[in-house]
Structure formats: structure tokens, C-alpha cells
Amino acid sequence: MRNVCQFYNAEVEQKIQKEKELLFWFDTAIQNQELQIYLQPQVPFNKTKMIQAEALVRWYKPEGGMIYPNDFIPLLEKNNRIDHLDMYVFEQVCKIIVSWIANKRPIIEVSVNISGEHLKHKGVNIWKEYCKIKEKYQIPDGVLKLELTENTMFELPELSAVREIINGFHSCGLKVALDDFGFAYSSLILLKEFDIDILKLDRAFFIDENKKSKKIVSNMIRLAHELDVMVVAEGIEEQAQVKELNGMKCDYIQGYIYSEPIPVTDFEEWVTNYHHL
Ligand code: C2E
Ligand code: CA
Ligand code: CA
Image 1: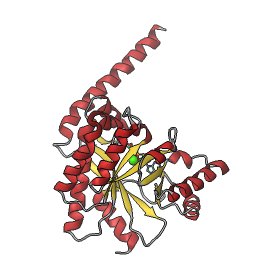
Image 2: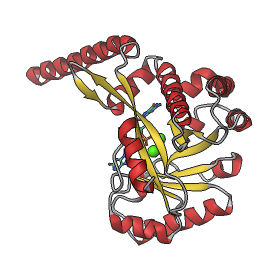
Image 3: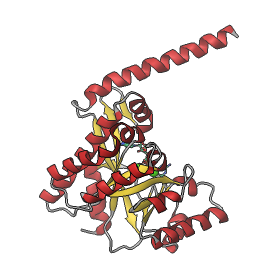
């Protein structure tokens, strides 16, 4: 028994040490340009529409290799550093769009994640900070989207505060996506209470699919369209799923079937090939 405890303690200590190191490194990671923006394409059902993308952060440590978001985002959330990361990613995405405009490339709509912890820290005025950056880079309206999860929306005690934030984003030309819908409670009340522009159906709907899950998905898409909400299906890995989602008129598909998240230059090439530009 004692040995099991000792082993357990050593493991816990190792984990704490690793977390301390990551936090210490994070403080210089931004200065050292170790954080990179990867883009994952979202492919439209209607082929005349442009590709869109989600920005996903990657931390590349020269001596440690790639660190994936799930290995450092929860840690940043726990240690009050997530606001810094979210704002950095948003500003980097603005710079990417500025470079597309300057190089006369097609402007792709990009969505950026906001952590629930970030929203909780900043409260109702969070949208002003995003607007300021969007205006600083003169990003046209409707190009940038912010992804909030259901849990994020319940981080604030009052639904009215979330409504104020969403209205604030809209007032400065930023769209709002409800991310990971289907992963948690999938509360339909959110669609009633808030003017959400995009509904992202979580991968949970598409793992171990059955007749029921397919009916839920097709009816969710129908409902979203009736409410003027665009739908993105996430985590799609198989061609048969693409065919079915196309049959259901799902607006966009995001998943490994088309591409993993890739560095910006690879993404630009991917878009050029896709649209035969
Ligand atoms: P998410 O927002 O739900 O992003 C989708 C995740 O699913 C990404 O993982 C993506 O690589 C992965 N994915 C996409 N297609 C497929 C597929 O076909 N199959 C499977 N199995 N997975 C797929 P990633 O990049 O590791 O990001 C994980 C999570 O980390 C994200 O989940 C998001 O919650 C968070 N995250 C990433 N970047 C940021 C950021 O800049 N700020 C914040 N706050 N969170 C971020
Ligand atoms: Ca997301
Ligand atoms: Ca998601």
C-alpha cells in the first residue's frame, strides 16, 4: 500500500512540476513567437460559397516540439493567463486578414475561440476589447467570428449579461458562434435567448452514429435554418457523413475528411487548390 502511495505522490509531484514549467515557459512563449495560428478549413455545402476557417492555436517549443491546446489551455485557465492567449490569437488573426487584403487574396471568414474563464474575468465589457482590435486593423464587418461554448455562456450569472456581450459583438460587426453544441446539455434555450449567428454541431453527434442521432442532426439543421442560424458540423472524418450532411443541407463541414488544422501558408495553398483560384 505504501508503495502505491509513494508511486502516486511521485506522479502528482511530476505533474505539478511539469505544469510549473509550462507556465514559466508560457510567459516568454509569445515574445519568442512560439505560439502559432493554425487554420482548419470549413467547407461549404454550396460550392459557390467561399471556404471559411477556425483558428486553433499551436505552441511550438523549439526544444520540446509541438504542444497541443488541450495540454496547456486548461492550465492557463486555472492560472489566469487565458485572457492573454485569447487576445493574442485574435490579434494574430487580424494581422493574417490584413495580409490577405494587402496581397489581394480572397478574404476568408475566420472564427476565434473565447474561453469561459476569459469571459468570466472580463465580464460584460469583453466585447469592447475585441472591437478595439478589430477597428485598429480595419477588418471589414462580418469577417471575424467568436466561438463561445454553452458552458461559457453559463459562466456569467445573468443571461442578460451574455445577451449584452453578444449584442456588443454584433454592434461592431463580429459574428457569434455557439461552439460544441451536443457535447454538454445542448440547451435550446440559448437559441431562444441569444441572437446566435452560427451553430457548431459537436463531434459527439457523429461518433457512433445511429438512426436517432441522424434524426436529431437533420432536425437541428432544419430548426437552425428556420431561426436564420448557419450550421457547421465539426469533427467529420468520413465521406459517408459528408454525403448525409450535404443531403441535410448543412452549411459547412469541418473535419479531418477535408483537412486537419494547418499553418497559414499551407491553408492559403489549400484554399487556392480548392477554389482553383
Ligand atoms: P474546439 O474549439 O472544439 O476545436 C476543434 C478541435 O477538434 C480542434 O482540436 C481540432 O483540431 C479538432 N478536430 C477538428 N477536426 C477533427 C476531426 O475530424 N476529428 C477529430 N478527432 N478532431 C478534430 P485542437 O486544435 O487540439 O483544439 C482543442 C481545443 O482547444 C479547441 O476545441 C478549443 O476549445 C481549444 N482552443 C484551441 N485554440 C484556442 C484558442 O486560441 N483559445 C481558446 N480559448 N481555446 C482554444
Ligand atoms: Ca471552437
Ligand atoms: Ca468545437
